[in-house]
Length: 173
View (tube, rainbow, N blue to C red):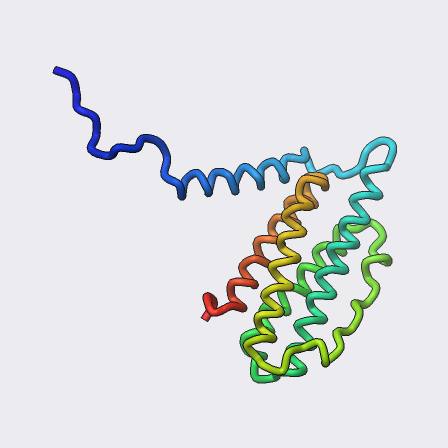
């Protein structure tokens, strides 16, 4: 006697499973740069690695400066923003720690003018969320262009930035 097909009309994985698999594939492709050795015999990849690290550290320092400006303009948001700002500063240090010559990336970030911070706290949070999201997106795109260990660090920091963006929006309340 033949078995009747299950009552579910569609076979195969659910949409949620496919989306999770696609996201994981992107991370695996970006993170499969080998054993973490970013240099080559000619040294070309090494300087590209150093430039990428310096740029990532600078971007994190600039984002920390944005947090500082919002904290200065809206001290009542300190409890919510200080932990996120501390993580952003830690990201900058992580990128600098892997650099063989940290001096180019150790330059101070440009200060964000107070006039650039919205006077409405909700809009200030939204601007920070946008900055976090934009930086996370740029870092996610850069995964395919950098070697193994730096790609893993970028992936981790991009994920943290996306989480920060969520926490800065109404979804994080």
